[in-house]
Image (tube, rainbow, N blue to C red; front, side, top):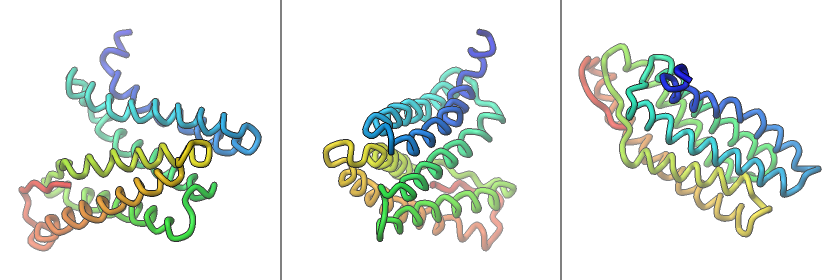
Amino acid sequence: MKYIQKNLANILTCARMVLLPFMVALFYMEASWGAWAAWFCFVLYAVCAITDYFDGYVARRYDQITPLGTFLDPISDKIFVGTLLILLVAFGRINGLWIILVLLIFAREFMVSGLREFLGPQNVTMPVTFMAKWKTTVQMVATGFLILGPHAPLGTEIGLIALLIAAVLTLVTGTQYLTKALPHILSNDSSSSIGE
């Protein structure tokens, strides 16, 4: 109990990784289970989305910010989102030109990770902006609807529209981030703050 009280934030972060294999399995079970598999997967996804919010809240509220948590949280988020987007493409929820939106999202994540790795040793901080939080929220909504897909009224259509909005926000925030970071990269400024 004492361990849970001291490390609840990290446990919530790890919970997403524990549930992810079950969600992957449910995608493959949909052929035999039908709508039940999609809805069960959606429920697990909703639980994971909740933990994604509360792990950060718990860490800040109860002073549980640790080096392990700081390391795990962004990595678990990228693995979680990346895996689901790949599955949605593989199982036809996202196809045709819509796949370009997924590529944009991946490209932005790779760019942000690369810039963080490059600028980190130079003491350049990268706080998340309000628009970036909206991008993440819309992207999560899109993923949820696409998991349900044809098993919910207008599930695929709503999911794709939300994915388009998320991709637009991805381009905007990614461009802003790169624009603000570029001068520091070129000038090797060692003390700045960049908004994601």
